[in-house]
Image 1: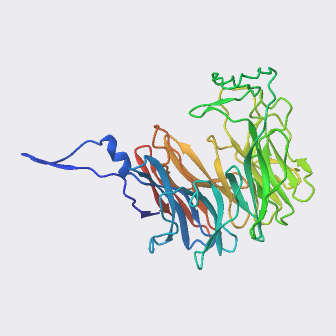
Image 2 (image 1 turned 180 degrees about the vertical axis):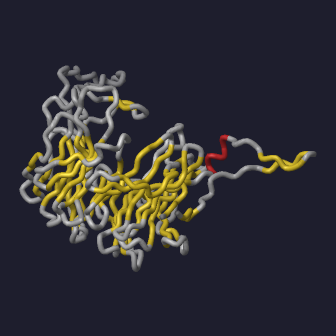
Image 3 (image 1 turned 90 degrees about the vertical axis):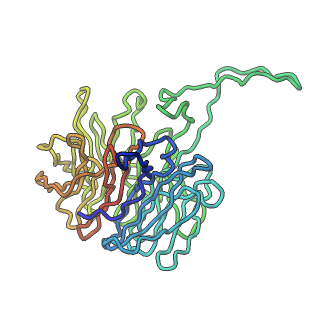
Length: 395
């Protein structure tokens, strides 16, 4: 394991007193001296890592971020973007020649950008009303797929009278007919759904693939780039059973959708095997218990022969990634307050890789972490914990 970049975490004043040097306590203003790493993305060949470097601006009290890149051995740590803006979600193309990322560098409007890694030339790909969500490259590196929030209008059952000319009335009542209308820390939610889109890297207008009133998870491409896999809850009573999602396949040409899983309980986070013949996903059979372990499953791409892989592992599996030979997967899990990285074979054998992942949750005493893997078995991850903001680690 290597601890690549030790970013500036905070500055402690050294106060001279009669009996020696003593560090002062953290002050509220010290938040502006803190920086942390997030979303590390290792290149397919494992030679470089792009990561998001997060910081705060003391003059505007804004959370900001830029993209940086460093060699796997820790050398040549350089910025890819600069400025008081929000750059995030970098994703390598399969040939490592380009990246896509999200940024509001131009006009505070979050857009999708593409950067050529040899020249660092950057161009915007989208100018949509809402920001693109989760993004995936096609295998030929000619298209990207993403989900994006699309608002919907509600017709109120109450028709308000017209106000007289020049009258100043109070704000009219807000009409809500969604079961899930308010979020913790978000307030009232805007009405609408996450829909799927595809876009050529040559630019143009994104093609909307889905239109119904259901949310779609992160899309992934099929090996032949003719369809997408995603998770969603298309059940008629979806607002009453929000965790009863399935894995679906959608044809990018005609928009036809096929359900690949069918059970009561969540099926989500589909990941395609390297040879394109199998899909790994997470979920469980919902038995209406207060807590149930999220397991790992593998099935054929047509939905047949679903197998429970992690039956003997009593921790939630998250962030699953296939290894390069398709004989197992990597995953992260929490154990006694520590986030760890491990691998699991298709026979269910678990092997430890590293630990001490974390440092992404600063406001609450919870741990959060992320990692990525290269095709030759190298890893980049957030290194930290509940008491230290995330640095960049590799192994």
